[in-house]
Amino acid sequence: MDEYVIYNINIIYMDHIISNGYIYIKNGFIADIDIGSPLKHLMSKAERVDGKYILPGFIDTHTHGIAGIDVTESVDPYKFLELAKHYMRHGVTSFLPTTVSTSHDRIIEVCKAIREAMNIWRPENGSRILGLHMEGPYINPKRAGAQNPIYIRIPTMSEVKNLLDSCGDVIKQISMAPEIENSLSTARIFVDRGITVSAAHTDATYDEGLKAIENGFTKITHIFNGMREFHHREPGIALAFLQNEKTFIEVIPDFIHLHKSVVKMVIDIAGPNRVVLITDSILATDMPDGVYTLGGLRIIVENGIARLEKGELAGSTLTMDKALRNVYTLGYKLPLVSKMLSTTPARSIKAINIGRIEKKAKADFIVLDDELNIKAVFVEGLRVF
View 1: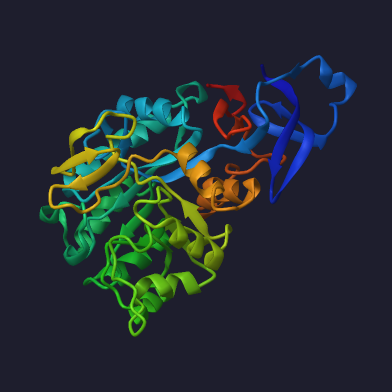
View 2: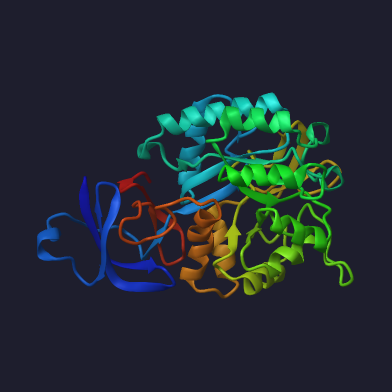
């Protein structure tokens, strides 16, 4: 339907809940939100949904794959449309497919496939493809983690120029180490193109972290993972970003990458307006335990935990609906958890008209039951799940 009303449901609106409210959708956008019953002339367009809460759809700005599909290996645009359907089932209405360190030519191929997929995409395909998040290859090999060291390199002006000429309109975020050669000058180039630059896989000190922020880094990738450890005499880059109110903080809330008390500490320090909950999921997500690959590296998944053969964590098998339930158990109210899964991720990459339930925003929302399980997913007003 071009227009309809969902009513008699609790709506997550900004920092509070509208009890027994209704939401009026017209032409893919939210036209009105209010308490009680819709106006009489709208009742003919009313639709009841089985659920307790309406939340903004989740936005995952850091995911490497799901259901056997790997972003870095996907040069077919239809693979990204497949990804969109799989993410949608977990409440994701927009996502940034994320590459790991790979060759320059492969990045260009993936960019082209994403651009084509974005042009083909329609709401019925599921989650919206927002563009590309490049994690690497401009990182510190000392903190490579599950990034293949053979592809890690220093950025050069010729490579960066070719990258931006080929797919600058597709790239929305790049994660790189600020202390490596040419990093800060490269970061400023990306920032000038409207790309979010995030500190990642870095051995930067606290002072180098401050310098990174001065040069346009506005985000830190999966905080405490793949970076210099915190020490009371050298707190490292993590504290530099935590203390700066203008930065965003990526958190993997699987309670494996970070102890649940650390997740709570980060949220309490930075607050929901800065914390971006991500999955960092890999192709083994929604798949059985077994042996997989990521960027050419062998990954072993046991009990849903992905590791390199030498034991280091290698992404996750977390989904965004599980992330919601995990963080909710830490004692935060649902509107605040929702903000970290939707509104703040959108702001962190400068995405407009998504990530919130309010007038004139795109009608991307999910319906949850009492136990916070997904009951329905809507993208631009179309029920896709």
